[in-house]
Image (cartoon, rainbow, N blue to C red; front, side, top):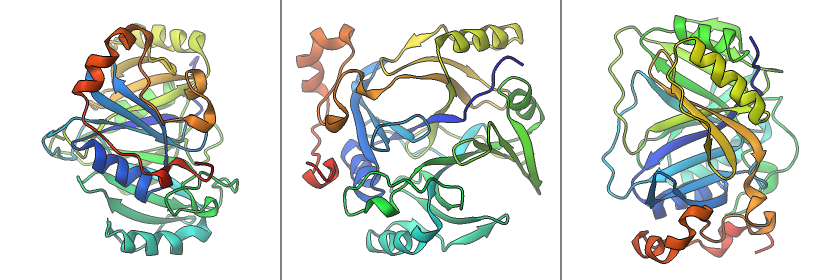
Amino acid sequence: MSFRTAGIHHVTGIASNPQRNLDFYAGILGLRLVKRTVNFDDPTTYHFYFGNENGSPGSILTFFPWPDARRGRQGGGQVAVTSFSILPSSVGFWIERLIKKRVEFEQPAARYDDERVIAFKDHEGFMGELVAHPDVSMQGGWSAAGVPAEHSIRGLYSITLWLDANELTGQLLTNTFGFELVREQGSIFRYASGNGRPGTIVDLRCVPGIWAGVMGAGTVHHVAFRSANEAEQLRVRSELSSLGYNVTPQLDRDYFKSIYFREPGGVLFEIATDGPGFAVDEPVDALGQSLKLPDWLEPRRFEIEALLPNIRIPLELRGPNA
């Protein structure tokens, strides 16, 4: 094994309405819109990146909001649940906020010995969790939209894959990605990388005969894992290719380099470099405030802006210094 990922880099989902997507993840969950760009493979569609103040790897949830996309269905071969980290002292705040914002959620439940979990769904059925854990960073996060820094989401906590069988996916995680199997409970197999802290956890839920997931609004498109640099990424690409995986060439996403492949259970995996990061084309204090395009699309800016849906970013979503 030549690769030991530091954990989850980002999760990318599918939505159908750009404004409602922005209003939920920035306006209700209080995440920062750290980048407003386009889908590089379909530049008439936005690509929103939400995260912490700096858009750090491990804090990022992104969406392709395809207007009028059909509703998807969670099922086998998908990342079904995306979990976020909160402080144990923030559970009460989030219960009150979700009630106030009329978000569908379940009352907090204990999981294992050290997690309190609030499961919720967004307006399109995207399945998320707020996980309170004592190892969550105490450092204050982004403060906006009525979410104070002390109660802000601290980043990603974990992902849950739904699979018909878990053995081959588990072998990939341990033998190639550097994860360790740290817990088994019923049909759930928990893997963690590095120090096993929030942001490094992958749960495999094995349900033999589970229905196939249907990609669409409210589902996850792919999950990305962290690579320290391009050289490491290319080494793991070579290793994956030698194992028979069909891996894409290294692709430049401006804010990181990426490779993609499908793991044995059918989930689309990405390996993304930690750098150069989201401040490469705009200062940190202005992240997400203007539409950014890659250099090769800049000559088409007028055309692209005319085709993109109009969106409104309320002042209160731009942070305490707006």
